[in-house]
Length: 107
Image (tube, rainbow, N blue to C red):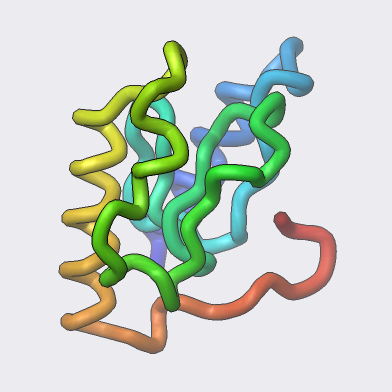
């Protein structure tokens, strides 16, 4: 749990002065990549400009082609997303209770 809180703090610090560029993530962050994070919600894009449009709920991480809507977009980091997907799938098997719906002020 301490590691999860540390990642949340890191995300907040990354937002820093340019908080418009970073989206508030689910309170539980298990992995933080360059563009994607694995959170208690599932896989979330860190960039606020994406406005949650490409986030993948935990209930969908086993679907094929979850990255299909993003493949042709210039900003999409396929390698980072693939790693987020691997981490999310592993966590869902090891401890499914980690994935919880949003509550309160988080995304």
